[in-house]
Length: 246
Ligand SMILES: NC(=O)c1ccc[n+]([C@@H]2O[C@H](COP(=O)([O-])OP(=O)(O)OC[C@H]3O[C@@H](n4cnc5c(N)ncnc54)[C@H](OP(=O)(O)O)[C@@H]3O)[C@@H](O)[C@H]2O)c1
Image 1 (cartoon, rainbow, N blue to C red):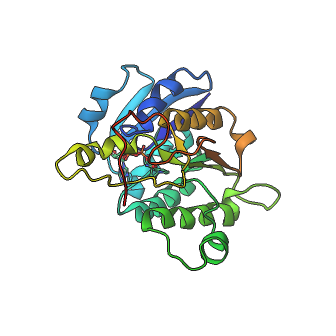
Image 2 (image 1 turned 45 degrees about the horizontal axis):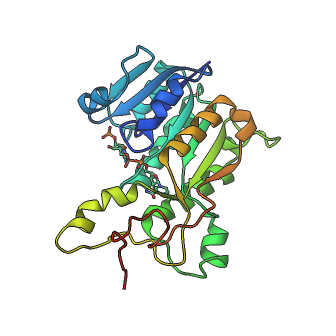
């Protein structure tokens, strides 16, 4: 059984993830750092297997000590926000100084986001938005650095798995106010060509599967999403609820 460290436990993925981890026979204790301990405690199951820790994951010294103190073997790294790259870099640095950590599960985004694909092949110079480009940098760090790969290259014995979800269904709920308000703006339109979408519970399930068998998923990127493509007028929209995008 392994102790696991979960970032963004209060968030979209963290919320369905915690009950799934509690039900897993492979996971012992779950450590959840947060900047808002009262809010997180109010929304999670009450059990002595979950520890809510008030502190900043942006503080690498605190982070390294916390990983060591709780003998963390597996980390689920899921970050967002304008400081995502800065925080992630410091986070990875702290993880590498904590020898107890054996496996990192990194939440990225769907598709080939490695620099060659992004800058040369797929997009031909079109610059990705910052919140996606940060994934390119981190995936390159993980895949390119020997310390994260112990497959005969004399690395540090750490392994990683990257999760690549497509667009969350829940994004529409976040934009509901704008859609239903006076302006009727569909702030994040999916367009007419069609996009894959994903339920955050399926991402949470993938995190658990990887945590249960890190060796099996080591060094891989797992894409998660529907095979069906959803458009602005997909089946499932209520009649009369469809939104037209010019
Ligand atoms: N939405 C999509 O369609 C989509 C698609 C593909 C990939 N993704 C990726 O999914 C991730 C978002 O997952 P999510 O929706 O589960 O997250 P979320 O719900 O937005 O997580 C929010 C919480 O995470 C913690 N947190 C996040 N970033 C932090 C930071 N830099 N420093 C400190 N705390 C931070 C905070 O917790 P506390 O307040 O408790 O401290 C915050 O309240 C992003 O990496 C995004 O790029 C999203």
